Image (cartoon, rainbow, N blue to C red):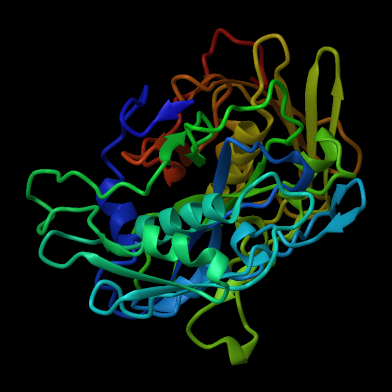
Length: 425
């Protein structure tokens, strides 16, 4: 695990952009898209010593109304999570534990958390205290409390048995200096926890007093690229990566294929009555909507292969989707990932020229029906958060100061192919 204080790569070029785009304290001028974290329920695959925080897509005006999303239901859209006595479809730990949050105008008004008198689900290894602590971390990471204006948290409990928790966690929390250019301040700790950010950019709430299991059965997430937008979106394309944990019946290849499926999990905090929330997966969003004929993943002892047929989207979004697949698959030199893009029989797609001239992509013009295939092999180094083999045009993965991995537009044009290489490379 990488900690927030010790990251192998620290990119500051997007720090201000992320702060402006996704921080709950920025002064947006209109409605815009963003994300907020929830404590993720992995059911029988949970690690009792830590809880992952998973981002979900939101739309809001001045970020009002986003707080309750932290504790809202998170439906498992790609298969149910199974345990020995049944199945679970809610992937938000706070919601299944009966924890509710309201922080309408933090830090100008108090945030309130209600602990309902609800027993822990029988499959979960966590206590209500652990889930409450993870929920508070989500609150703090989406708001700014300063020495002059701290976040005031009021925790109330329906049951007398939970009153001690309400007393323990209520209080004032500071996590930022009064001004952005002031020296850093010591953050108010959430008792008996610490944060760690892993090589995939996911932050975990770790409980140092709980011994981790010798072996965990939790499946790793796959990542859906979510394009920030709206009138207060960034000037240059920026894709956040939404972690998705698939159901128990999905093997590794099927999990990776969800990157090529729509992902309609979206929380409209501005005008939900319209029912017009955007598609979270950038591959299918935009105007007009993007599409793909098929997205198939197979694996052998030699590596993993992905075939993406007839993708109809922009060069940048297709590049972001390929990078999301690379980050999800974590290919190594011993087990690389080969990605093949296939054009349709009609007019050449927008992305063909830039991918064809990008180093590492090999073209095959012999397919029937005027179709063209392009193939590239990828290897990912999780320690440096960089590709050691393979490339895409127009986009790149970078690690922000917080440890989160995002995809930003690459304004540097791809290098021209090496003329010493065989034709088509």
